[in-house]
Amino acid sequence: MFDALTSRMSRTLAGLRSRGRINPVDLESTCGEIRTALLEADVALIVVDQLISEVKRRGLEAISLKQSGINPAQQVITIIHEEILKVLGINSRPLAQAKKPPTKIMLAGLQGSGKTTLAGKLALWLKEQGNTPLLVACDLVRPNAVTQLQIIGEQIGVPVFAPEPGNGVGNPISVAKDGLDHANQKLFNYVIFDTAGRLGVDVDLMKEARAIKGAITPDDTLFVVDAMTGQDAVNTANAFDSGVGIDGVVLTKVDGDARAGAALSVTSVIGKPILFLSTGEKSSEFEPFYPDRIAQRILGMGDVATLADQAKKALDEKSAARLEEKFISGEDFTFDDFLEQLQAMKKMGSISNLLGMLPGMPGAQGAQMKKQIEAIDDSETDRAAAIIQSMTPHERSNPKIINGSRRLRIARGSGNEVSSVNRLLERFAGAQKAMKQMKNMRPGGMPQMPGLGAPPAPRPPQRSAKKSRSGNPAKRAQEERG
Image (tube, rainbow, N blue to C red; front, side):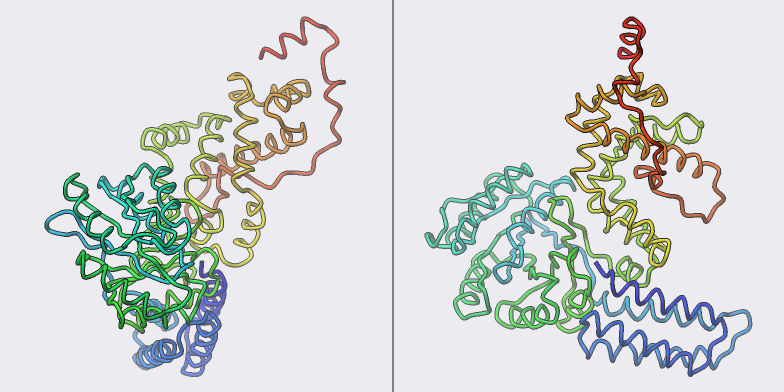
């Protein structure tokens, strides 16, 4: 998310920092670049003009003051950050919580916006916070919507109330009422109502949504919108707010939205806060919307807070403490540690999202690292895990002993080619090197991510596995046992 906008803004701010002392002409040029970047990101014109106007006004004041010891360029950068934060942070708040449970959350939006998937993600997020959510299947129009919600509920371990089969059969208002009664009887403290959408805003859609809302009186009515729809997201949100009344917005599919205009426009235009972002296809790729963190991402300052939150979820406290203790003591980084890091990264979500949270990643360094690790997907992680798990404990702790015959055995045991084993060993060697660099690195450096390691070095011609096997049967058997 925000890739194109972050790249443009980072270049603009880097140019501003290099000037140090700036004048009104420099400020005008910078504001022109920011305006172009925001418009190309599909931010609403009214929002862009208001933001640029404030940056110019406050920037000119900062330049005219000429305070001793204060860098005007840095002041202007601070002003830009504060103004973007204002755009993102109007009425920012967390999810509602009823004084008397259950808290009722109604999801509304167009068909295809990802409401049903989002319902599951929200339920899982609430469950991980220690709550007991219930999903209620009120979308009885879209084919298989009820079945989809039931499958999602089973996958995440959250109950689903679905008395009607859907596919055009059943009364969604009755389902909503009965679902709320069920939540009260079974003492669920959150109940999420997945309602029907249409391909466009129409009278029937608004009438049904208003009827459901009147029947359950939700504590939060959340408008779910596909971030990739750009300015249409703002128009549709306005229509739902007028026709039904919404309390907040959830943006889905933000991982595919390089322009990010909806996120920067919807809050300012309709005056409703964004509460959550759906950042990928997995149920865990879902996060609360923090305006300050998003503003930092947009300006290329990174989002270390969210990265730390995801790391905590991916790596339990005992494992993290053990790795930290090993790192400090100078113990060798082993294949068991490597596997643990790969699996933790898989839990944290897509690589591109992780890179976007690292400060200073845009530019040559970011491009190089992104190119290095973009090819590492879930299948690559699964392949690496299979190879490592086919090693003996002795081999995992002492990878230098893995000769040709061992590589052949590991490849066969994991269902891979020997070349895949060779690549993993090279990546692991890079990870070991990176860990040593991190230990000896001066503050302020940017190490490579240990779980990924350095790019593989050119390989010398390999002898065939057959030739590498010892001619002595007893010695060969000893090598195989490790």
